[in-house]
Image (cartoon, rainbow, N blue to C red; front, top):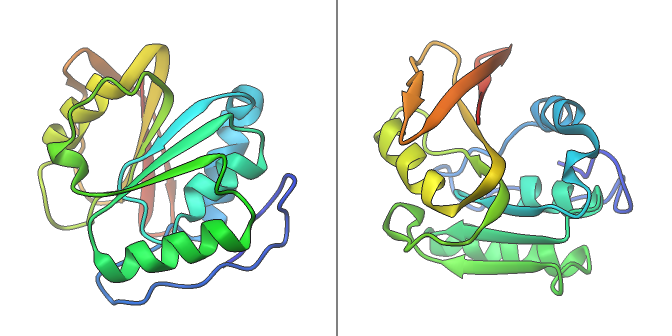
Length: 174
């Protein structure tokens, strides 16, 4: 795993410390950030199921102003913290040990990235919580198994685009 582009391009990241964490592939991260383009510059980003922190660090590398990362798995949390420190991104990142689905909302983010466990959990619930963290005009991106159905509309969010890559897909909501 590595940072794809930006100021941290090429920086190698530690992989997951547990089989329970499935990091977003380099290829899918590249697709995500190519679609987001310059919209990441100066953005406030929330990575809701951070795992190794690869998505959040890619956002920092591409000019995000600040990234908030939620992770509940203690082993993954240590890897995420190590990756943030290795990239020198501690000032730009806030790593929260906790369950995003129980978060209070109100983070006022321009981009919320959701990568919940592929076969577990309620995607509608994750999208509802994400909506409480979203700034006006912001967007939510949901990574999911390609074969899994995603809601068309939830909590005022409307799915605007779906991109598939291998077994994975990204659903974009505004």
